[in-house]
Length: 338
Image (cartoon, rainbow, N blue to C red; front, side, top):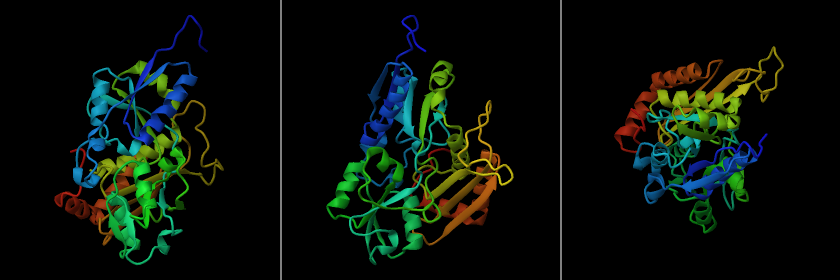
């Protein structure tokens, strides 16, 4: 409850300037305003926003979508930053922390096309747009005949290129399209078993200055324990593999029912606990960008970090280390952390 005697602090949000980033910042802003805060959004242009003519995998800049926003946080210009979680490096620079991870929207990728209803319907040599090595690798694994081309720009730009006939299909994150209400051209939501999503895809990460207990407490209500558990597992795998959002690594964790408990998969945590009950199921992949070799791991566990690390170790032992070494040595992607 608020009163005239107790005014809640004004909060400043740092955000990228893209249409989707601003939707995300405004979404968090609205939730904070409902709690009685005054909120301002400061648009901060990042390296990833400025480099639009090169495939992201070839840029290889550490924290390319976060560095300038973190500089604003460190300088005290903003109090918190709203990121697509998949853009946040698994190892944050010193001085920052993830205060909350929001409830995840659909984490899967979406197949968008004007003329074709699913990947299988594309003609031989069909032209598909994506700048993600992860998506490219998995597409090539099931359809090596496809002609895959880089696709940069904001969501509207990418959809316009599809509408203009530059591509037979493009692959985008389902969550981003749904948040923006741009679902007309979604023809297939691709099952995770066919195209494993990026770690953290569909969730938002709320970043603050490390040790800023005041802001941490104010945004704590945004944290979703189920999503945080799944994201912790996925990001542990990504960290162990030394990869970032632009390497051919996929990770998708979900909380599944304990057979003997009868609890719902989406059941909230019990009173006083921070993590949901249930078994964590993790699907993960490491793939050669050309789709010639795709390693898949599927396992269950109870501790998210241990599960993510175990899956990563298994993938590395089966040849994932050679795949990733080749990716890095070809300059296709540079790991965003040591």
